Length: 373
Image (cartoon, rainbow, N blue to C red; front, side, top):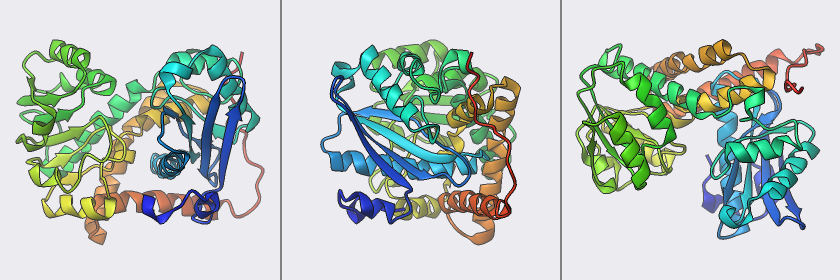
């Protein structure tokens, strides 16, 4: 994938690199300002969350939104979903700008794209924000009347299922009994995962976070879990290192510290540079679960809202993360490539096959309609 240094702030540099459309939007009355990037719609309308962040510059925002949109295309394709990838970033201080009028003006903007973009929660976008947006657009997820609401539930389940696949592949076990996990970040996803973790007889849990409330909540769930300082978590001897906070945490400084057999967590963009740090994990004989595959439960939830929410079907698709990871591990072994490359290949091959399959004109079913009352 492209690096930040490969581009300027010229939008056409990105569109020439395969992105379909980049849209700058602004509402003078509310102060709304942001960028939407549509990366790929060959499999269906694009889907990706909205990130609200106070970027230092528009160039930084453009870089972030394009990187995230490309990732959504791969995530959606690898998850077996018939949707493309997009992302939107809203630029500014969410604590100062967010209110009902602001979020409803953003909803009106999304509606103006006429179903080409479906969006929902991401950084600093809450269920309350989505409810405000829902008053103005048909194309927002995470609204209780349309489905399951928060994407956290299936993200947690999918991450847990992914851990089981990795443990089966690397350690030949069907459960987590007797294993040690080191959690980097114990927010909503990890705490939701607690119900599945308690089904196993874990040997030990190490954890770290910078939020005192999250630390307190996790200790209530797992009183015997051992808290360590953020910089110490990498060096703890464990079977699974589970990153669940910020991205780029696996890099030149941290990978040499790892004493784990598996990396499996819900954080996005865990590898600072795939081409460098993916092979570094391979050299240490650490099995890496590609983040956009293992953490796909959230977008799976969104997809099922898009086609008409049916919880058993959503759960079944989420459980399929196990099989997709096993397929990625097989590609990795057969083609002698790191698992991050195998995951990209899985996504690319699926897109290519379906695009070819649709080469002949057939009037297709209309699937993407919200259950609007």
